[in-house]
Length: 469
Image (cartoon, rainbow, N blue to C red; front, side, top):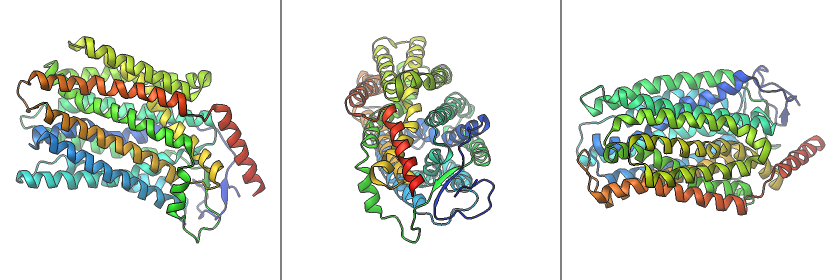
């Protein structure tokens, strides 16, 4: 049976739903990417600035702040699994679709909890620690409810692998636009105020309001064309069976492993760059310039990804990006002793990382089809949530490791740092991500087996199964 979820006004029948594939419009691709701009206006504030807010404004010890990231992100990871299962078990899918309503209903709550996370209440140190745990856990929970359906929606928008790669690129472009604007625009707002706490709060309010606008724009301008309900909707998906099926999905498992490497590396760089600028280069004002140029290079990389995928495939484009990234960080470790060289090397590393981050979303969409082909069960939400579970674990490491390392090397906020502290910041900024980029090359080259030809055969087999069902 065929239906257009955007216009039917009817509840979706309990049968495979499929419309004639039409090319996605440019407006729809842009709208999908703008959803990640809105998400990242709030998410990136936490990843880039919250650790420093905890240590320098809230007054938490650096090791304690790192532990908050570790525990809250592990909480988020399990929240992702719960949300993914919830999405896949939905019975009544109305005219808004299976995934889009989550974007609509979480936009404002997500903005509110983002603001609360950056408040500095007049509590004792213990009270502030509890406040930080509670607010960032709440943020992660609401973010999961918003972001899991958003990311799971790509297979429902198009079957075309080229269009999926394009959506992944638009999403990555949106993510990087959000990252660019938060990197360039946030600290100047904070520095306008004598009180760090006030500056952080005003900046977060501004970015959160704009983030809501972008998320609602995404909701209003994307469509779900392919939604496959399970044949027996009276029987819920068995959670254990769903996750057993994931362990038969080899491409997904490899993708999750390399994301533990790359996403951890990327987020450590984001968290540590402000420490590097302030204490190594002694000029925190360069952060906006570094963000403008380095993330600007990311846009160039994102634009090149579709062409590279056509020529060498997703796997080798992914490996090429890691090689460029590792080279950039390796050179920076030895030569980035002034602001100009630091910015140039950052451009190089971020350019390479753009290949990796762009292709993650296309590869996880491929894994949805592989999982259905392998097990006979289609579970977009479970696949995507398991993938983000691993990404949240990497985020946990990305917050925990800098906090612990800074504690070990004797970091003290807002003073001249010791040589041990400087060495620790440099290692976090360059050695940690560079080594993990090299590890990713090894894993992808030896263990990722889902070629472009294999994927096309899987899609063909699935179409034959559905036609005969």
